[in-house]
Length: 261
Image 1 (tube, rainbow, N blue to C red):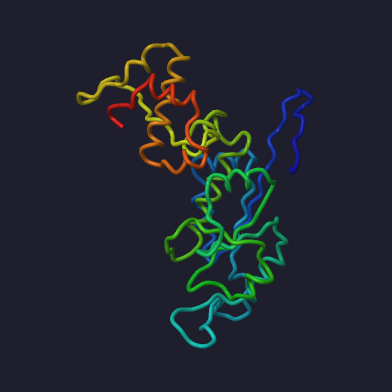
Image 2: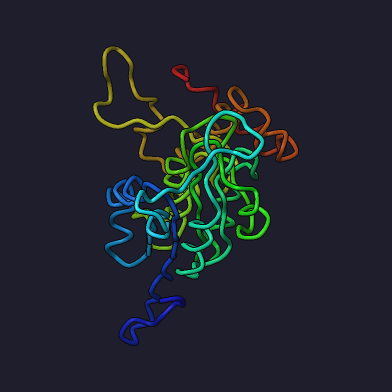
């Protein structure tokens, strides 16, 4: 399914399926993670079509070798180009094909939103000291980094990207407001503090406004707490929005910061 269909003529659109292909020497790491929780439900409901491919299936020797020593010497091993090219060409996966690499574009919520707007993409998980440079030059479309941290391979990064993107698709989350109000959502702010029962726990009580039943006031309070938290923990996000508006300044004056921030 690649489009939005009308179910039984009732006028209710069926959310489009997102196809993601992952290429790895440990495909079960990604497949097993994505079989649980929100991702598992999305797959069961046909919202996510995840296909994990084992690069070793396209090797030509009995040891299923995918790596070799680097020309010129040096530590570690490099993934060979042949099985990677052969695996991708055999599948003809959805494009763009992203190599998960520390030198790639930094993945963030804006990029997750961008990727959620298309019907499919693919991820190539590197291992060892990386992939043969000809894979970068002639096979992949772009590179993605999840941050300045070293991992043994791209599988964990792939799981992070798949979850961040899938949860933004129509129908993937039970509450359509969640992607809007959570941290880095449409507001560009961190999420406000959240509370549930009991109303008092070990001497710390839930703010009275949340128990008031005044939903308009509660929403203003939550908006103010998002601003307070972001100003304290990530002021760069406020700067990126061009600073505080006059209405936001009034909110901060109306509602002080949660004392348990």
